[in-house]
Length: 145
Image (cartoon, rainbow, N blue to C red; front, side, top):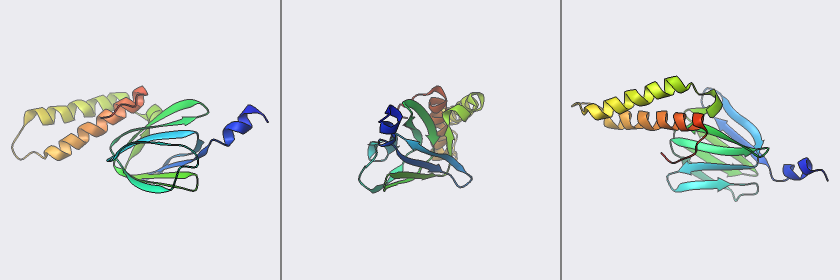
């Protein structure tokens, strides 16, 4: 049996879906994602389960190479060797406009530092987390945010 045939037995389907589009639909070797319960590492033949997804960076391995995706809050389901992630927003690291992500990060950071009365702090914190996740995914990092 050829080496590539052996690797096919380690793969499972990953789908990352937003309301606007399918961001990822591919056969992958592993996925690591962040949930309120902590980080989950998922491989082929994982037990079926459903969970929540945090704002942050998820990574997946395809043909031995790592790929990063910045994602918003959402849900995920693992069933029958298919991991389906449904989130409000997701963006592959290689598709992220780093300049725009840096500007969004600086804007959110400024808002939090200003401490104005009547400001929606939760909204500013979420914007900061989203922009930080986008910067990390673009840089190919998978650190908690």
